[in-house]
Image 1 (cartoon, helix red, strand yellow):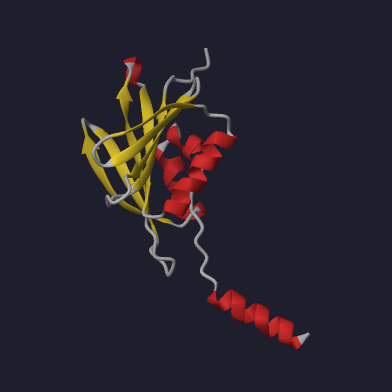
Image 2 (cartoon, one colour):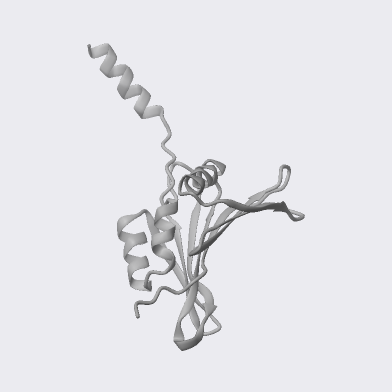
Length: 165
């Protein structure tokens, strides 16, 4: 019995955990959330640190990054971007970037699991582009082409404002 316990401890000690810190459901929840809700969720509930706020066309754009650990991958979340609509409302965009192909593949699985149909697949000079759409959201996934360097990213765009009339 002690041998099995020792083998388990050794295995766990040498295993390298690489879990993404945000999933597709989190992205959908955060895309239209307030700055305070996003900050609370990412910095308290997840392993992200607030990096900076930049003003873009008078709108605060916030950057968060995972706490760089032994796993060696990097994740960045950018919030606050969007398209202004009438009445002071904005259609928001949430951007997620990672250095891990494993994480982007997991997000693609989650997107299709949620029933988002692939509406476009193509390439430009540097990356492969996939777009998925529903009535409420448009999701773009960017991956570097083979032989090209770059980051893997997902953007979630709100398509309609949700109002309670």
